[in-house]
Image (cartoon, rainbow, N blue to C red; front, side):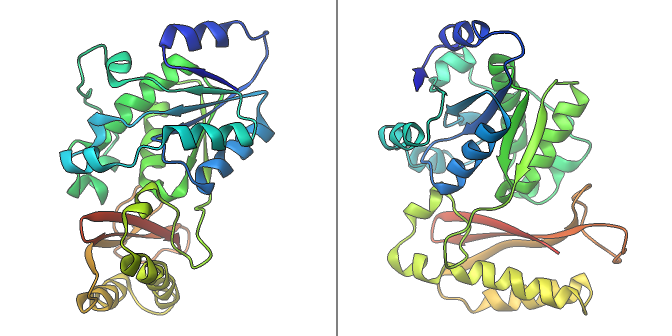
Length: 279
């Protein structure tokens, strides 16, 4: 496994690959878990070479405290990637990526950026678009792999690739969950023991919503979920929405030709967790 911190070094290596070599790319912010590793495994099956980036991107954090507290476990991350025979790891600094001008570009994602996360995290998706496009420029992958826990982010990246005519296929991969249903997240390690023990409640609530959506309308399901969290001692609901998978617009009237998904964001103390489920 080769590890590069400099853009020129990783590009030199990638340019040295023989013509026709396919590159799979898994962008991460580190603090890796089995969910990330499942993306790498899938990329390995579908490509000749797999590149993983580890970069905590400052421009996608609307909360400075969250950026400071984001878990950083680079040594452990590299050991995990080595254990599954990752080919190349790219570990740049913010200065290397942004050339001392750490700010986002502005993007038009056709309105996808104004839904859900966009309502609560100002500038977040401009930061996501900026770093993902930059990493695509550097690595030039044929396929890039993302987990569906950040489903809105996948749709944003797909839209960016489409509008910018980027020659990369965006591959979405199912949410990887703990045995008790909690969606794997780098932030989970910041939960207290009590919060972690109760965290399966999030996925349980999503499953209840899925069942209810079969017989109730979206506003009724929304009220039920709000009531579930209203009296919860550890978790505060930030939002729950049922939206069209393609447009991410909230559902008004169910249409049998459309695919819907329920999205949720909650706070456990200062730790913010998101999840979603296909309906």
